[in-house]
Image 1 (tube, helix red, strand yellow):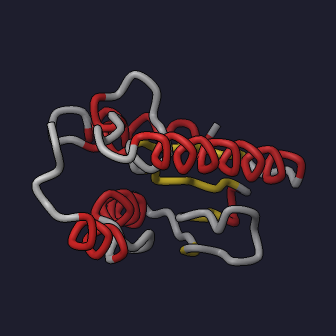
Image 2 (cartoon, one colour):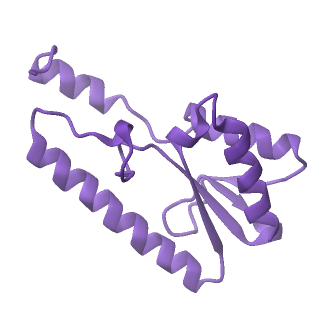
Amino acid sequence: MSDIFSKNKRSDIMSKIYGKETKPEILVRKYLFAQGFRYRKNVKDLPGKPDIVLPKYKTVIFVNGCFWHGHKNCKRSALPTSNTQFWEEKISKNIIRDSENIQKLLDMGYKVLTIWQCELTSKTRENSLNKLIKHITL
């Protein structure tokens, strides 16, 4: 199936995607705050600028979009049918960078948690967020 937008229009659409203050991030932050957790957002001093940092628990949380971070076996991570080579390279670089940043954070003594966009659907949200709380307090 070909793209319904022209190459220039698609480029314009993709350029407007921004990586901070996404709906999944806001949802996780509101839940954590309601549960009494205090955090910092997008800490530039840490590798990968984690979305959420809980200093008291020395824990960082990445709230990842399934497409952009190559979530395995997830229907949301399917690559577009046009310009496939570009997207394969882009997503694989993101995956490599993510794993390098996670390793650096682990070496610094942080607990690293990742919550995926697909885990925050209305059906699975409560269970996923409860699991997240359990992992933070372990």
